[in-house]
Length: 257
Image (cartoon, rainbow, N blue to C red; front, side, top):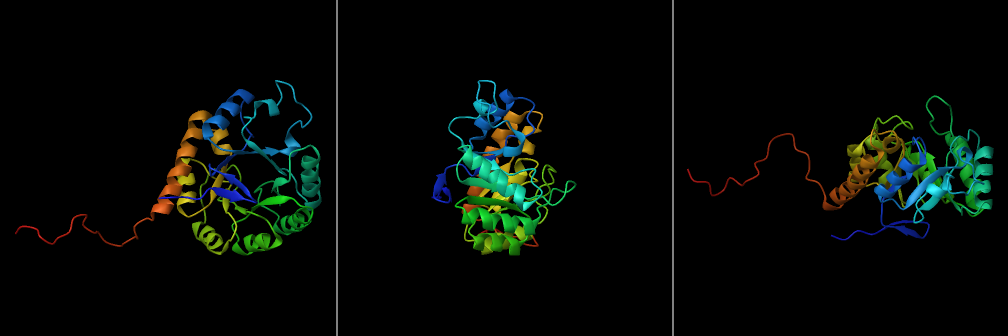
């Protein structure tokens, strides 16, 4: 059974797990967990780190060298702030890829979809490869794709909630319509959530809090890596259909009376 690599805007990745850098108790634990995850992409909240620090004790010194840094606009509540933050990341040499977040309110941290669409239009026009964090609305996901986003990142549940996939039906609708990769972002709580996301046919999953907040972040990073791989393999293998009644594993024909 062959599988194609995850490809976003011309970049190919063997791992379908993307990890974040927030909420770790220290840099040493963060680095160990990032390495254990096997991920090739790591998100960094531009507004929450010292972008100028580059010493051996700095944040960036603890990022594995093989990982692609994906700046994100976490903490931005307007499209203007999000666009400004993305531009800052590019000016500092972090490239054209950006995980775009425009948050609607502090309690739910749900996206402000109107602001998200507005910011996406501006950044795509400026040459950014925009990976938007959005809600699980198939219409919004399609609009983001039509704008030119090379991937869409619908939430499974509120950020940091650990509730798992609340609306698999909507995710299926997004996956059915999308012609770009769909990365499930936010709400994953444990390995089984990651596996379910991949079994639905998602192209990848982004996980931060579930790893960083675990009692053993390194062990959870390994669990998430294996769950992502297992879920993808199960999707490719094709599950059996659900049936309302039992079906014997062995055929009845030929049984001795």
